Length: 258
Ligand SMILES: CCCCCCCCCCCCC[C@H](O)CC(=O)SCCNC(=O)CCNC(=O)[C@H](O)C(C)(C)COP(=O)(O)OP(=O)(O)OC[C@H]1O[C@@H](n2cnc3c(N)ncnc32)[C@H](O)[C@@H]1OP(=O)(O)O
Image (cartoon, rainbow, N blue to C red):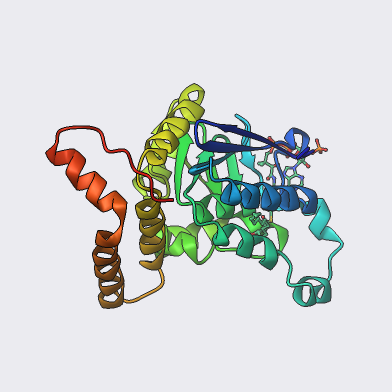
């Protein structure tokens, strides 16, 4: 598939999707979101792909929704057209793990897109923010919701009210990102993580993704029960027999459940 605003490479079970609108700091316009949705669907359907990375350029992961695209829209356009809901539903339907590899700006929809991924590895140049208030709007796809659950009310309120940016150090300290690496090592680190995940039992990987994401949604007792039942269920898989057998036979496990 030929794309204009993204670059897709599949190698060794990892699909790397690079946002590619450098002149607009990867601002998320209709075409980019449509192409990203298509690429994620293709990665989900491709049996050779076991982990997905979304990344951008050194200067910007994504500087947010495209302001030029939004400027002309009315309330009726946004509300009746359910602006951005189909795209966000699409990324949340992907069951394979998605790593956000963030360098430079991840602002507004860019920060929100990164937070919709399963975890974020960022470079020491990363800057996260929800500056929508500067535009007379507020975050629209998780910047007041996921950010608050991740970094806490005070920091989320500060960032959404002042529009200030958070650097990589603060992002790691706040739990927004999993790891911070030197800019030149970002893709190597993200690819290493993706390949390590690709070696695991795919069925277990998908259960982890679902269980950790559910922790945001349900009370602890319900989450613990879900986790317990999925732990029990995995004893029905070949991968559980292979994984535990390989350990006891002191060899590498060869997982095969899809
Ligand atoms: C399955 C598909 C998955 C899809 C997932 C869902 C994605 C949905 C995304 C929509 C989310 C909507 C809800 C969201 O909360 C709303 C927003 O995101 S509002 C936008 C928030 N972002 C901003 O306000 C940042 C705006 N940019 C800046 O402040 C600055 O550009 C900067 C980042 C601080 C960098 O400053 P500089 O280094 O000085 O660079 P320039 O400003 O000169 O920018 C260079 C060039 O890029 C253009 N540009 C930058 N940001 C945007 C943007 N957001 N939209 C459009 N264009 C942008 C800028 O205009 C310059 O262009 P030029 O003038 O050179 O033509």
